Every structure is written in structure tokens, then in C-alpha cells.
Image 1 (cartoon, rainbow, N blue to C red):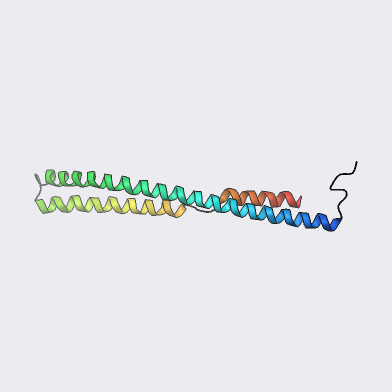
Image 2: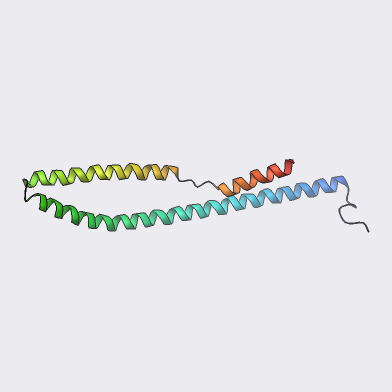
Length: 127
């Protein structure tokens, strides 16, 4: 019994292959877009959490700094206590800024799974 693929001519098969490749490329592009949207949404959520946590920690930290400066002023002149607490805070803050900047620099919005899928499909097609 003849089947559908053996009854087709070579030009028909080439047209079908072209159509299927076009559909595959379109679907891969849609997948890449969806993955990038998901990565961006994850990044946005993480940044919001970082900002909210930072605000709360900052309020508590200000209270601790004030308490530390008052306590240190018991044994040092008040202006020396203020400079010591403020200077130490600036140093710690700069270190944290550098760490955060490096972490954000490593973040990627690239659709890595889609890229791997396309590379794999290309390798399979050339076998």
C-alpha cells in the first residue's frame, strides 16, 4: 500500500521541508522570547525583593549606628565617635556596593536553554 510520502515528488518534499523549517525557526524564536520574558520577570522580582529588604535593613541599621555612636561617645569625644561610626559604615557600604555590582554584572537575560536547543537541533540536522 503506497503511503503519502512515497507518492510525493521531490519538489513537493522540498516545499514541505522548507515549510517545516520555517515553522521550527518561528517556534524557536517564540520560545526564546518566552524564556527572555521569564528571565526578565525573575530579575525584576529579585530586584524588588532586594530593594524592600534593603530599606528595612537600612532602618534598623540606622538605629544601630545611632546607638553605637552614643555608646562610643561615652568614652571618646562625640565628634570622634561620629567619625568612627560614619567612616566604618562608609567602608562597609562600599564593599557591599562592589560585591553587588559584580553580581549584577554576571546576571544574564540570554535565553540559554533555547540557544542550546537550536545548537542541538542544528547538530542533529547535519548528521
